Image 1 (spheres, rainbow, N blue to C red):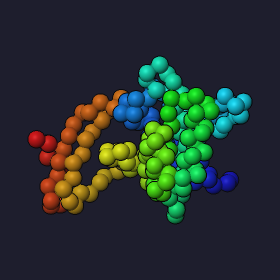
Image 2 (cartoon, rainbow, N blue to C red; image 1 turned 120 degrees about the vertical axis):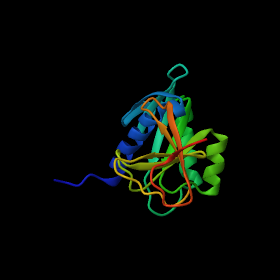
Image 3 (cartoon, helix red, strand yellow; image 1 turned 60 degrees about the horizontal axis):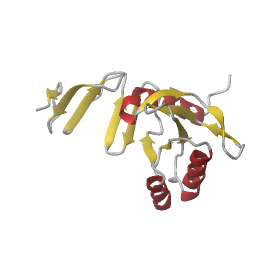
Length: 177
């Protein structure tokens, strides 16, 4: 039996993450890899396909599972063209490392959402950064050693609880004030 390729697992984790935070991102549904025909008659393979809540317009998701170099501007420029050619509402780039300076400029100019998803993430255990928000999904215990703010969301993305732990290795999280 062949081991699953890391990038295939990363795409599955991305799909799970986007499903978990779809309300936060304004998505109505998230689907697996598929091909989408562009205005140029080109068929584009999309790692994860999503639809926004405002009319169900297409949102393209590109996954870049890398261990070393940040994404270069050419990679984002190609993705920006794919978004335009498919007449998608916008795009989401999911990467382990982040973007080089030129790629970051393109992402901002083309309104591409950037998500950093940890290299070793699984569908049950991940940590992701979207803008200035951190999303964590853990199926085991987490030990806190510094001050920490946690927000608990249900599967619909509704905030259920906020907690804060102090500077010590305290027990349970204290309710936020």
